[in-house]
Length: 251
Ligand code: PGA
Image 1: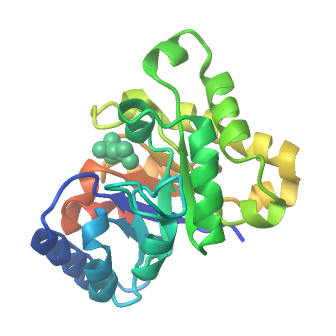
Image 2: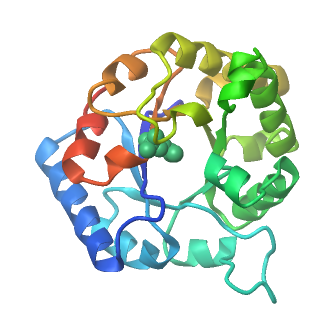
């Protein structure tokens, strides 16, 4: 069954103490809101994971923002999928455009990371999305199709069932420029079709596809009303409980 999800990607923001406070604020706001129509995920920096898992107390799932492409060993500064899992975290975000562009993460590297994450019992939020020049030259469907094919479509159907796809047009991330609901729906429908072609209609229909890129309390309801948009991956607007909750309650 397809789930609605709103996930907050804190990126490199918040000290440990600030992060624990934000997690506590989100937990409290969720309790006050009563039943919400989506699963909520928080993705803080690595060093916050253990404390945030404790703070949210099972009300919210917790995700890392990345993991290493190797299982263990002499990789100074890296954090493995097994380490992430051992914090009590259940998800990892892989393939975020900031990782792809600033840290040279290719589809081949990401496919390795996805394998390790799944082997260690983590679910994966896998990000895809085109840059502005690719959209303007009409290549956006090709780019996203290639990211899906090379990053994910080597998986078995059983493994693919643990994947959440996040469509994040790079030109919309942190820019205040959101994709229109038509642009988002068109790409989400394309992604679902590609999944159907690879794994069949049932699994495609069950896959959660999130939108990310300047999603906020003012535009979330319209985006989430699109038939193939199943929630959001939220950066800037996940950094206060108040703004984040406006999105969580937008379904
Ligand atoms: P933004 O970031 O909401 O700040 O645009 C989204 C993301 O990069 O996940």
